Image 1 (cartoon, rainbow, N blue to C red):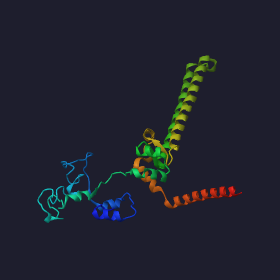
Image 2: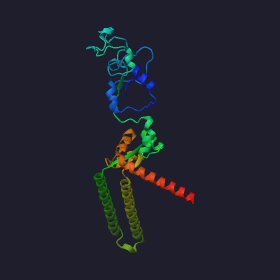
Image 3: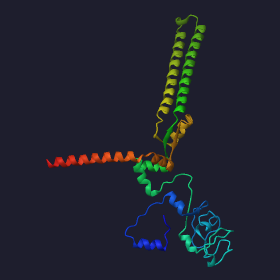
Image 4: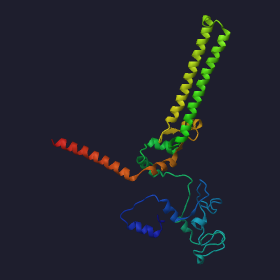
Length: 294
C-alpha cells in the first residue's frame, strides 16, 4: 500500500484501470509510522484537541503523524524550515510541513481478529455459513465446538456409571432393610394384609428409584455423546454444559471462530470439490443439449 500524494494522483489519472484492495497486516506495518495505543471515540474539527489524543501514541500524535504546525516540533525547540527532517531529541517530532499528516498512517494492534465488513459474505461462502449464522457468530451469540477433550469426557462417563451403580445398590439395600423391618413388625408375614401392602409399596418405590437413576444416567450420557466437533450452540446451552462437565470441550465464537474455520480450509481439496461440481454441471448441460437435439 502507498500513501496517496501528488505523484500517486498523477499516476492514477494516467492509468486506465484502478484496483482497490485491503492492505495486508505486513503492508500496514511496513507503511506505519507508529502504533496508536491511546484513543477516544470522538473526532475533532478545527482546533486540535488536548491530551490524551495529542500525546505520544494518541490518535493525533505528532510523533506518529507529524507536526500540527509547519516547521515546528511539539516542544518548539526547533522552529523553521531549515530544520526539515530533523527529529527533536526532546519531543521526538520530526520537523516538516503539517501537510504530511494527511499522508502518514499509524496502526493499531488488535488483541483479537477483526472481520472487515467487505469480506463477511465471502467468508460465509468459504466456510459454508449463511448470512444469519454469520450474524450470530459475529454478535457472539453462537459458539462452535473446536476441540473435544476425549479423556475428560471418558472420565465423566466413568463417574456417571459409578455414581448410578452406587445409587442402585443403595436403593436395593434400602428395600432389603425395609423388608427386615416389616418382618419384625409383622411376624405373621404374608398372612398380614398390611404387611403385604407395605412390602408392595416399598418394592414399587425401589423400582421407581432405579428407573429415575437410569433416566438421570441416560440424560447425562446423552449430553456428553451429543458433544461433537463443529456442533453449534448458544451461550446459555454452552454455560449449562460446561457447568456440568467442566473442560470437556473447547469452543470459539466471533472473528476468532471465523479465523479458526478459515485456517482449516485446505485450498487443494476445495479446488478438487469445485472441479467435481463444474464437471457435474457440464454433464447436466450436455445431457440436456443432446436430448433437445433428438
